[in-house]
Length: 578
Image (cartoon, rainbow, N blue to C red; front, top):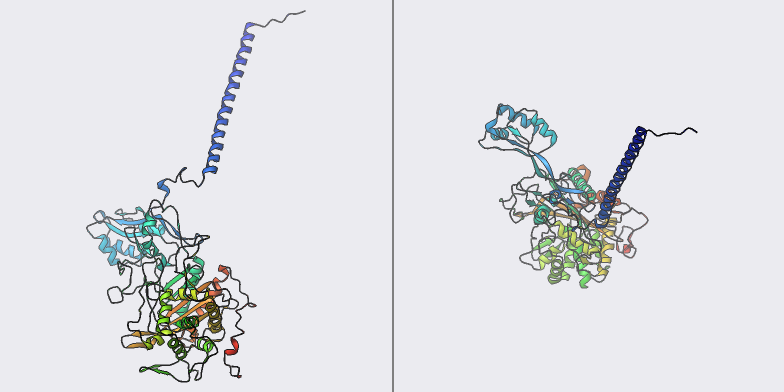
């Protein structure tokens, strides 16, 4: 047999191969081990995040991620106010290389709301200054294209209101030094700037969808009636939450005016602080709201027992003479009227008689219980004080009963109507979203039985009375018109009217209160050349209800309604039905 001899060179090659294989093997083990450790770290980190997510003590958010001022959002999380890094436009006049006149002309073309003269003054001043505190990216590009090296574009924190004019009077704005100057920005300034709270958005009770609908319909109503202004509010009668509040004409909080803002937030109508677009007519102006007071007077009389039988008739055959004053009806019925007819036909004469029977003490108690003698209950600082009668006698009791001789804000009226239809509980209005399970603050001002009766009567006013144009099909709207001449130095200006419609829906289970007020409407073809609330304010309510009903989860149903069958026979008709 032939013997195989392994040469030394071959043996060395085999050994080298084994060593290399061993090295490769251990390298692979090390790589697998490192990968395993890395995988364990990743899985462990994910597990820790899953376990401790939401725990502020674990991995608290760094301060750099918290905005300088907290965000404000609506009840559904839609942004209303937030702080962003925006552009400013800054100039150093001493370093100008171009002709300041040409630059001023170019800047005026880019920013038409600022005059060429104003820009020229800044470009030729001794000290550097802002040409624009806030500017859009496209505006910055346009200014950059002017080719001036003395103009700079620093990035600065700025307050942005993405909805522009929407809810401007509620939100307010911040001053040049970043502090709240109006509205909720002012009231919540410390909270919004605090490092402890600014990381969490403030939830408002507002609903941007409802707010937009109200503002659109008020604006349309102003155009249709040729009015000077308009205001409105939508309130949840069960909680006092404000879903929408609007005052027109409005303003853009992204470019506010810092003039005419009193330190205490109150508007003083004496020439020192002229009324401006930034004045909130819902909370910071008072008005005689006319016949919208009549249901409140009837409710107080029902509660007090001075009106027990709705069929009882009162004399309205001629104007009521009392202490040298004459109380008359705008559209005289010329006959005796019962309580439902009094509200349906809006009789001043009969309401005055009911108020007289109720008496000053009980009428005054009812109004004070709903805080008609105080500034309206809401978080805003801009709140006007009602004009309470200085000398309250028998005539005052009668006139206040139908809404003359006392001036309150539209918010006062909204809260009062909420109590009148929700079962009798008055709730202070709030701009904060109610937390789940939170029991709203409130107190009883009407009995549940009186509230149930008033729901019937308010529905009858819309179906058969002066509020017919507010009847949104299927939504069971109830409410009352109010048209009041504006007071002046000599008494009342007969050619200047404030028209208001106060409503609730759906009346078989009333949830939402709507107040629409039109300031100094003019008779136009669209309003049948009428200025009264039934022609001017009531249609605004109808259109608003039709828009917001589905958004609030209320589906129109023409087969449902408030049962008023027991009261309908009390309304007189030409056919002789009494």
